[in-house]
Length: 358
Ligand code: TRP
Image 1: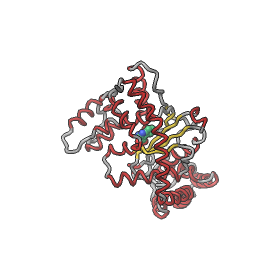
Image 2: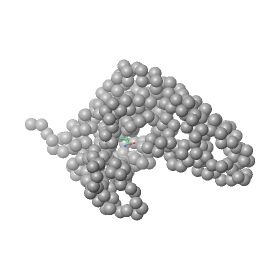
Image 3: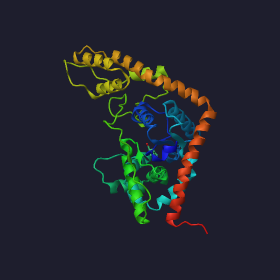
Image 4: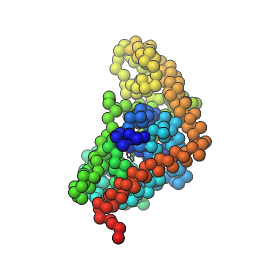
């Protein structure tokens, strides 16, 4: 702990909107586990961000609890990494208000994630070749009883605060979050130059080296994602998991030796490469090449190999979920540690902005 200050501060959050899937595991969790010893790691559950989509209160809390258990079950160790819940840090909400004074509504409206989510919330279709201005007009002027809340617009401010309040410099995120990280850097620079201070460091994406891992879904195209309905969840019951894999999209099979693979089949091989041993992968690759492959056999093997990864995690999730005392201990210690840094940053920010006590 003494040398903690020297370690690079890493921070990442996940919105509490459902169970974690295999994509979260390979894309994030398993990597987080590897850097716990070498970095000052901070992993949190972004329940305030989850509020932007107005979840029902029972569901919100249940999701926070299950994600917390899944983090721990996947191997994030609260003795090494700091694990906390965003809403346990009131300093975040206060700094969110302050930072918003330096954020333009135009730049927020042009954020890709906002345009996407706002359009979805309003049920506006995504027409080809529409300009930003046209989309903005549609969002503002939509004649509908649905609304886009201001929290959704200011989502990037809140995310920037999560990062800046902890003075994190390395932020492991997926591709879809890089624009938010870019905005965070912009806000940090803007704050520094407006007040003529050298206060906030500019955070960058965490480079794990190698090509980014893309975990495909089971529906033949694209990556695994909550909203795509193509997920294998870490806590999926074995029966359900097997059924999902057996139903995965394939094709009619190779028609000639050494033919190229269609995307759905390639996706199954990608999943196999993540979860199986090299000799199993080779066996099926060879079978594909000489046209003797039976996708049913491949899927059976894949389901068992995925289960070998998820079963121990699922068992631990169940144990941890039953131990409310343990969960409470983890998050209250996590909050304490996160608040220390957050309070120090907030005090500085207030002072820099001219909010001073009499
Ligand atoms: N927006 C991120 C996502 O949806 C979650 C998040 C919130 C986050 N605050 C963060 C990620 C701070 C990294 C750092 O995935």
